[in-house]
Structures are given as structure tokens and as C-alpha cells.
Image: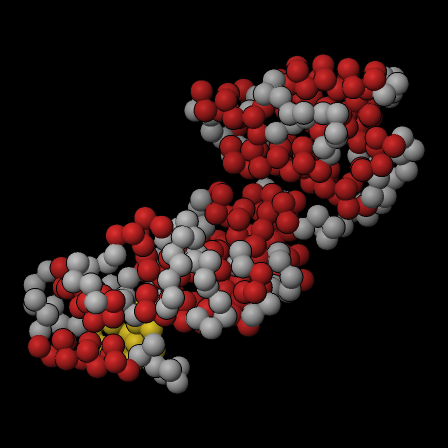
Length: 347
């Protein structure tokens, strides 16, 4: 049961603010007025603070959405699927529930009219980084001033990101447009030399703008099948992938790197297989059809065109491989790929 004083203050907050968030650690409710001023209520629970927070949320929901049952369950199911499509997203930003903020951030109806409110609601919550990543998948956010604020936060939060997929996704998103400075990009690239998950973010997003720190130059393979690897940027890409594969100790780094490699070297006559020997046999057969069976570089390109995560995902899952065990167990798969890469790097 809420105290009479807190109930009164909350009702005033609801009527005067355009967005509301709850700080569960400080036991406070913060409202943002239309004039961008913050108003804070310090809660005074008499017993269980968790139940008190729930009572606060129930009041906010009932006053804002007219529901007495608490947080709408359909929003929780759909919040990360982009299926929340309501006429007034602003209402969901006044119920003090972070799942509602996630729902708005991922809604197809999101526009720049509520973007600043969404990011304000996410501030100082456990889901702030997740919400930031959702927002940076939207084109209009990239060019909005809020986009740079989100990028600054995610860049600062990056060292605390333990999940490999989230780390890769964050780097990928930060490389869009001019969200971060060139100096910051350079630093991320350097960090990638030690933590290769950073490099995966680069090769997924920034092909065409990869950093050239070692004087890599374009090459001049005359065979039509090798034109795709001639440019300076493709040479840097191949070198970067070689570095990543040499240091593989994380499954998602490997999965996503192989997907990038197969995508950039794809060939209309090549399809991906789940067995490296099938990929090798296919490369040999197609090179013969092209009359280029004596060209080792062409066969290397055709082999790499057929790689994907399906080459390794079954083995890793079956043996629950982690760390250096991935390289050891998959040596028969990774060695041919690495050898092919070396053939295509340089003249």
C-alpha cells in the first residue's frame, strides 16, 4: 500500500510530466516535464521495497493507460519484436516500466518526436545499453543529435560488455556515419588487434573504410575470378580475417567471420556446404568448368566463396567447444581456409 503522501506526489507527477522513470536502487521516481526539467520523488516504503515499487508501477499504469492489471502482458511479449504499434507511444513512457521503454524503442512507430524521451527514460537503467543498440538500428537516429549521445554512452560502456555478440553488434553500430570520431574508430581498431571481436564489427560494417596501418596496396590479379580481391580494401579485409582466424577462441567470432568471408567472396557457381571437403571438391569442379583448374588462387577464392558458419557450428555445438579448443578441434577446417587466405593476400 502506497503512503498517502507518495500517492499524492505521484499523481502530480503524472499530470505534469511527459515521461517518467523509476530508479529502483535509489527508491525514487523521476519525471521529465515538457520544458525538459526533472522532478524527483523520494519514495518512503514502510516494508518490502520491491512490493512498493510494484505498487508505484501499478498506480502509474492505471492512471496513464487505464488498466488496473499492471503492466500490459502483450507488451512484454512483443517489446523486442517491433510489434508494438500504438497511436500514442508517449503514454508508454509514463508508466515507469523499462520493458515499456524497450517496446517503444523497438516499435515501428518510433519517430524523432519521442526519441529524446525514450533515451531519457533509458538513462541509468540496467537496459540502457540494450535500448541504445535498438535505437542505433534506425536510420533517422543516426543523423539525429540523440544518436551521438547514444554512441558516446555505448562507447563508454563497451569495456563492460561481456557478451561477445553484443560487443560485436555495438562496434558495428558505432561505425555508422559520423557517430564517433575517427580517433575513436582508430582506438577501436587497435583494441581489435588484441580482442578480435572488435574486428568482426569492422568487417561486418565498415568494408570500404577499413584502416590501413601497414601500407597494404591493391594488387593486380588478371583473372576475372580474382578481381574481387584486388582492391586495397579487400586486401585489408582478407588480412584482418586471417588475424581473426589465427586467434579464434570464441564461437560467435568464428561464426560471424566465416559469414562475412563467404559473403564478400561469393560466386554464382558456388554454394555453401557444411563439410570442408565438399567445399574443396566444389572449388576444384568449378575451376575445371571455368578452365582454370591450374590456377591455385582461383581455387582458393572458390573455396572461400563456399564457407559459412555451417562449416563449424555442428562440431562446436556437439563438443561444447570453448577457448583454444575451438582451434584445435577445427584445425582440419580452419587450416584450408587460412591457406586459401594466404594465397589471396599480396601478389
